Length: 355
Ligand SMILES: *Cc1c(COP(=O)(O)O)cnc(C)c1O
Image (cartoon, rainbow, N blue to C red):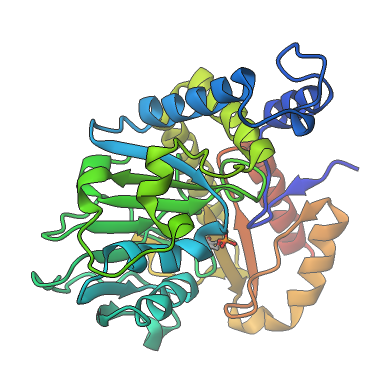
């Protein structure tokens, strides 16, 4: 049976990424050796890193003065690396969910943290809007897409201080004005590659300003200087990321992705709003284009397990909501075809007919 992969992460990748990575695992760049069995310092792999950096710069229109890094440790290590490298006295954080909270927690180990706003009291169902960013902080940290709660900051905000963003689950889903950010980071396993590589886009001139000593591996300047080759980088996920970006470029880049993502999410949200059995969980203007959360309407609450089983029997995978929200979550990342969203909608409609 065909499976429809709505997993939140690790999640669906373009089939080109998977197929081309399999080929490289067997015979990498005509070397007669497998991708997992060659030196990361070989000229063939250096070419992969160079091309992946070039694709990041081209597709996101990254200005001069920024470096693109491929590191280990996941977005979770960035929660600590960001304050390690940038927080001298005080930083500001916007609290929009579980990941934003975790980021903030690490920063508190390094200095004072100002929480400028939070939607915690409403179980993170919206993005706070009218907050003031203090002028005396070293940086302001946001999470652009809240993977668990299904909310998203849809535009690049103007910040009077260095803006730092966790874009783990919406990088390459829409055009981004990188010049508005000092640092963007994320784990690759949502919208880009298999787990194992973390991307960092950093404006070089924001570094070197804190007085504390920084361990070599945790200092962004180490990885800038050595082109992500200070130690052995995650070779296979970087190769897969390159394949995903080639696929994305051939389809028309982030503008085209944004168009497709709006269309896919629009179809599913329309069905959630129309179908008598379901309702959305977040403020409409903050609805994520990547993670679409919904629950049963009050009077149909008892049907939750039954719908889950019904959808599973139709090949839907990964639609269980995170335990902190309940209900359902369909992740509609770049690689998920529109037909798969349509199949989920049909499943919801069929289930509605029988109740
Ligand atoms: C998944 C996720 C993380 C955690 O990423 P890891 O690579 O597992 O550390 C952090 N932030 C956001 C927004 C996420 O979706």
